[in-house]
Amino acid sequence: MRLHFLTVDAGKRLIAKGVVSRGDVQRVLERGRLVVVAGTTNAWVAREILGYLGEDTDGFPFNRFFRGVTMPPDASIEGEFPGDVVIVKGKWQRGCTVFDVVDELKEGDLIIKGANVLYLPNREAGVLIGHERAGTMGVIMQAVAGRRVGLLVPVGLEKRVYADILSLARRANSPSSTGPRLFPAPGEVFTEIDALEVLAGVKVELVAAGGAFGAEGGVWLGIEGYEKGLEAAESILEEVSEPLLG
Image 1: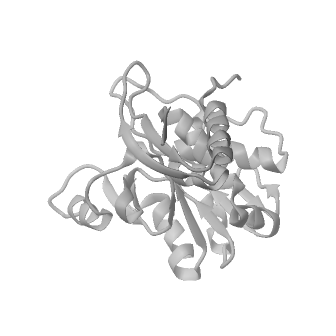
Image 2: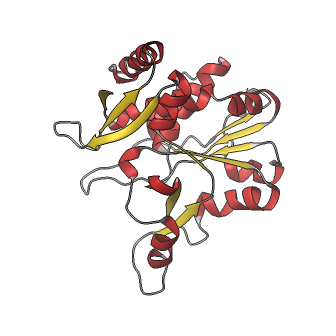
């Protein structure tokens, strides 16, 4: 086993590379409708997808590609929300949101939505809700449960919890609770582990976590496999861990 450390941002970049390499994602990009719902992990997913399509992203504020976000008490948000990233048969529909296109989505299309909560043993995810109509999840579920539209949930290992999502949601959403609500996201979870397995054909396990001086929330991944796969995994990890310029 070879151990490698990933910061939170490097993990997001790794997840994004894994998402765009998936055959089902590439097929939807070519033939159907794909919606990347705004979020901090999905900002990297959107970058990778738009780069794969050869789209010009100059001026697109990826650092503002989110709606709700958890921040320290003294932090502030700058910039205008740019909308979600909507792709129709390989073409980026600039300025559109999931609310604009949800009624047009059908079986064979795909929504990519991030999460705030991950219960890794059961591969379950959930989304914190601040809107009284359940925000984007309330709209997304019309397509997912109503018309069998696919739902892919890229989520970092730093968001792991230690109880099943339905149990947490039942308590968070009870009339006596306060703060955000919790909406279980019934889609396919996709983490850093899945990304490395897809990209390099290796076996990956979460071994340890945490750090300091910018490594808070990071994870140690144990990687096993044949030499070719191990070398490919190390190359990918070096790439996503490099400082991003521009």
